[in-house]
Image (cartoon, rainbow, N blue to C red; front, side, top):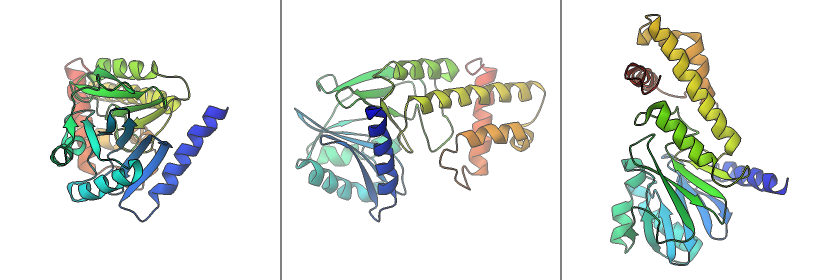
Length: 263
């Protein structure tokens, strides 16, 4: 019960910080670990103080905010960033690498040399997604394998790769493990399981409608599709995704089904 209360407090702190006036919000997990995010950009950035120095995961709050991010990290840790890690190679996660390297940090492809961080290599959002597990804090950084602000993007590995990634994440830690998605509010394993179920329901329904001959535009109007899409709208935003993004999500799902990756 105590651990569950701690997770609830962390999530409430995240919500409170997100309403602050600062462009970059901060969620404190422990004296050594923080999750930061720019209000208008959304990438979750890990900041971890280790015996070898400060590690930053996915340092991209938007290029204009990189100096502010560096200052806030310095203020929190009383140290400059020593190492940079990335969950995958997309710009919204790697865009700050060059800045921090220019400030003296070293980029690592994996955290093997850092005792406080373990990693998994999976194929889901991209062919080389890295999941980072902070065993001391019982926290997982999933990158875009999991997203609480958007629909699933399992385009590289299809459902097989997606399921493998989720299974391996669920095997880390315990039921109280804090799950930090690539974007959106941190969650728990129950939310991750729901995300997987909703993803499977999405693919199954799209498959049936595709086999029935419905076009993409017809699927967009189908009540079942609209209902399942809203399950990913964790924050209940009035404008969840633009119409073009909705269409693209359907198109890419159909492509995976047709190539048996998403079947």
